[in-house]
Image (cartoon, rainbow, N blue to C red; front, side):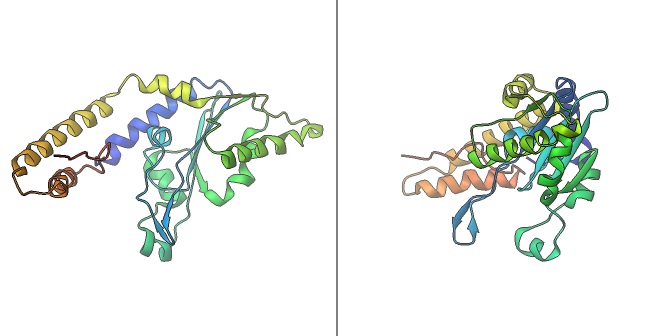
Amino acid sequence: MKMSPDTGFAAHASRRARLAGRLGNAVAIVPTAPERIRNRDAHYPYRYDSYFYYLTGFREPEAVLVLAGGERPQSILFCREKNAEREIWDGFRFGPAAAREAFGFDAAYCIDELDARMPDLLADRPAVQVHLGADAAWDARVLGWINVVRSRARSGVAAPTDIHDLHAVVDEMRLIKDDQELALMRRAGAISGAAHRLAMQATRPGVAEYEIEAVLQHEFRRQGAQAPAYTPIVAG
């Protein structure tokens, strides 16, 4: 669904504030989903991580949200730099400066700076809220940052001693829908209903299943939906 900056992104910022209020002095780390290669240099259509999107509204790949709790909560986005040449091939990129302004983050940096900055962001924090177990490479990266902080112990720096599952906290938040979510759900339902009515009208002897599916997909996109929630099942 389409979303305007003055309505959608304010809702995401509100969710970040609510989550920060539940972190204590911990730090939450939320990566988006990686891109997947289909064949050679062609990718599958990109789908961001749902937890990351819930908290950011940011749809680009190669991005990580860091949310620091405490008396002065801070939301930090790491994302791709602006690159005019790559944008010709891959599409528009916000870049850190524009993303910070558009989405309401306290700070934003290039994703290439993530490994260098994370140990400082974790220093003297009692705990980390992160989802582990889905990606071994990501798990190792998070543990690597913690180990860097541990190596500074002689300098009086304390490393996080606890790791908690972030999904459990965010799942509880997502149970209660805010006004923006309710509006999107109602709009998605209206689009789905209209598309299914058109598909039924197009159904007759001699019409192939893929043609009916095309009617569904066309109406979804024509009315502004980004993608179906699931792959359409059209069978006779």
